[in-house]
Length: 377
Image 1 (cartoon, rainbow, N blue to C red):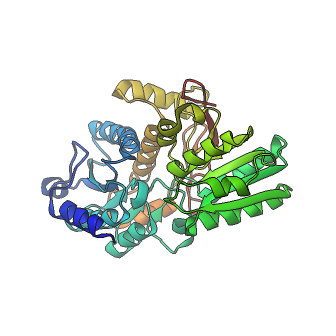
Image 2: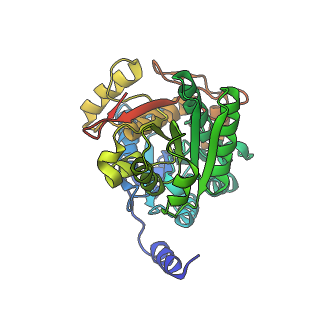
């Protein structure tokens, strides 16, 4: 670890951790038999807005359950520790949430903390790791019996994008991906999906995660031949590539996987983001065409929530959690409750852990940025 990061990490660990919830975990709530949830997520830094949005939906649902008497008399309490987007701090937070705060489950881990190492800490500590906000294939491939995922994998996302492109007639689809284990997993799924969709002309190019010099990638993915580009990088790399590729004459489509933070990308390249398609793991939240989103819009108005994709995901994750806990309020039995929980049917959105699948949902939908820099379907 770099010395400056080490010093900053030591200051964070030694100081007072930021807490985001009026329902902080306390010794009194533990004695009262409450169900204690712990979360590590960015409360500061570039991804703080997404954390705030997710938590608005989740905490509002948990509050509604508590206001109605909880589940079998037990209320939910949730505490969030700030990791500022650092994986190292997320690991520290995961241990603190269990050892110091008595969390029964680690819930809604976000950003760098939604990772394999934090899931393994949950296994070691004997608590659940529920609904991390990530499509990481590593969490789906490792042996993690206490990890319960809600959203689809990045592999599911890229397969759906290739299928969509083939359906509308693209003959050449290319991929820009991060030079890391997750990126190469996405690349493998991309190549399999292209073969299955009979897209014979495709190319994959990797980028160093923190490298925004995209000239070499632009040269390798010729704008004159590409019809669609799938972006599986950070928002900074993706934004730089979009600007450079457009400037080189590309007039085709961009598809951004959930590895790209949509809010940050739009803030970074503004009007150049118009027309970019973003993969979403939950339905379009501003429409009443599905019962799940119609219910969410009514819920958002009642609880003064700004509806968006992240707040809807938090709301759905919390509903899934409370749906499972209805089967048992004993922390020691929560794993069995998840494994045997019946499907949660919400009207146009279904959550079910089925044999052979590690995620409760494989829902994938595309949303596009319009000229007002807002999402449309």
